[in-house]
Amino acid sequence: MNGNSIRSEIRRVNSWITVAALLAMTLAISGNTNAQSVVKKSTSGLCHCPGGQFYERTNNFEPFDNVNACLASGGREPQTGQGDCSLAAASDPSGNDADSVSPASDPVKKSESGLCHCPGGQFYDRTINFTPYDTIGACLASGGREPQRGQGTCPTEPPPSITSLELQDYDRSAFGGWADADDDCLNTRHERLAARSLNTVGTSSGGCRIVTGHWEDFYTGDIVAVSSELDIDHIVPLRWAWERGASHWEREKRRQFANDPANLLPVDASANRSKGAAGPLEWLPPDESFACEYVLRFSRVSDLYELEIPAEESTRLAQLTSAQCD
Image 1 (cartoon, rainbow, N blue to C red):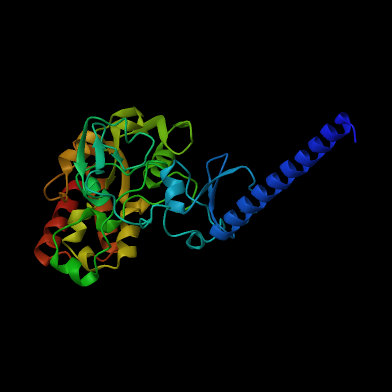
Image 2: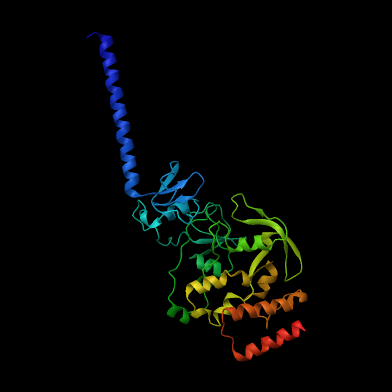
């Protein structure tokens, strides 16, 4: 065999070796992926869990060991029918429990705008001026706003039992925060802003937040065009309800109460904060023309949820209603 033939044979053998190595690598990756049943973050940012209707079709993705890791990376919550996230690995490569509470060195940060940022969120590291809290419940209870999707993994406290709640002081986190009942990425705050705007609303780039619109503030009579100037007020405050029976409710009923549109109004933030947890006997809207409607709504919600109002207070509320609605 001459020199050219030998070199040609060597090249042919090397090519086969390369192909074999690539095939082995592909099989190893495939086997590892299947073995771990990874959560797939698609190019659109949606987290897909094993067994979901689009899981097998999602070929361009970033793999994660569990859904918490996917969400912490900025991924969006799986939609209904997107599989069983419990099938994904329950722990990360470091051996830390995926659902463990973040260490004290990674607090929930309440920014100057009032938004609660959780560790791993896209703006967490950039938030320099903040008030730290150990849990998301503590941040919300201080008046903070619910994190948006992609704002990290929030350290939480385990839900207290009904028995322990009866012995505890008011805890806003027991009402569960804003929900996203229809899985459209707009939580209750933004659903109410969209529903109450008199004109077409403007949304954030991801479409998950209402940013601009045209709202009439019933408490002051003013017109507001920027959502950041508005709070969503619980007409019957959560603390007021807690002290009149809500502390004994099941957690799901409290969550329903906190997200019930009948009990929610977009209002001027400063007016809402002046109200605090007061009932109508202590506070009425600055715009007196709305006072009758306000006390009637307050009574309807209180009756709907069968709040335990003492007889003397109930009598005074009835007298107030008559005085405001004559």
